[in-house]
Length: 467
Image 1 (tube, rainbow, N blue to C red):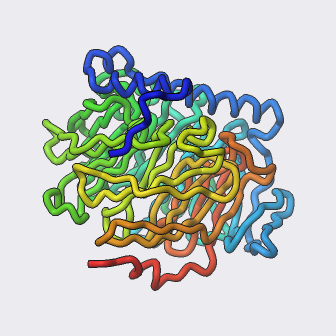
Image 2: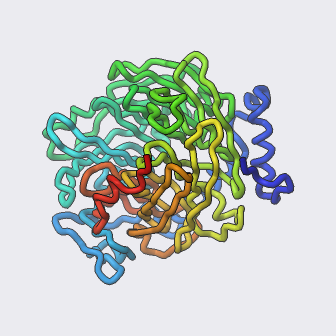
Image 3: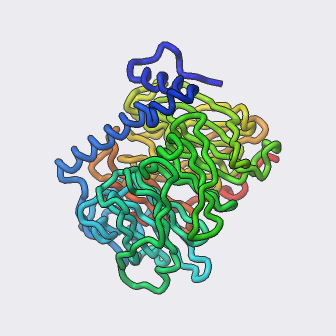
């Protein structure tokens, strides 16, 4: 295992102090949320304030539809919206924050839903005051069909959404928000935006009702509210198998605050855990892997720190080979200069073939300044929303025998035309799981529908598999 050196920089000492607190249940109970998480929230809030004072948040630009705009000569020029730098990515449409349903809000997270009965595709776009549902079946002509106001009317920077069995589950990092749930089939046939109340509100068993993220294992119909104080910041597990009737399942808080996670029905090379419910947790300074198969007694399989850790934020498992490797983003290494990083979004590459002993294999630095935020994997590609650097697409090749991972950037679309800096503006997240296009939610502007050109579909489906 690789750990941060004991002789820490001043900016890292708080993280190391909390790492020790993680191991003491009483200390965790007192701390609840870490000093590091609080500092991240303060930094993001400060950037939002500066952005608003500069007149860039929200950036009231008109929506663009009915005409694809190609990436030509390294730029995409969208009339009335801006000039965006790009490589191999065309703009299909853009929906402003105002048209999403709010005039004075910022964008945040995003997810997607495919209506299996109709074939329609929907973007689920989060904002600081509510959630918007947009039909993107025709990606060049999106239709906003629903606006769901936040349960707590006070704006919050952090909102997250996931889908299971045609139901939408929404959380936010604000006291009193709780978890909203909404039957997505209500939007069928709509041709314009309707303001909707959710179908229900799940109240956490303890705590003040805030949650930073929500994680979903759609195979087992299990949701996890993470970064909440209903489970001291850990994995708060909710059974959503009975759609529209969420029920408490269990809690894991043995490693303190979980900022984000990916929970899967495991199908990777560590056959000891085949078909188990495995959560890969991003716990501020570690990659922490938990077996949550027994909801009454979840087990921590490993807790691994790494050189350069500043704020372990989010990550995703590989598709090829399945669940064997992992891509991790650290949200503060760029600003704090840890591990030799000098302001370029760094993707940490992990070998997780043995769940009890993950190994950091290296990292990939993007070629322009920026902070990495949320990434997702589809086939042999990693789709990253990296704040002011926009959407970045990496191709990876991984060797199941040696554990080696090779990564290079193959495409990008910078949703923040003002430039590139190590700041919390621009692309918040993306959803790459529709067949032909990627949706991106931008903090300052709104919903982008993008199409990446020239990806090798054969390579995406078949390369890098060594059995």
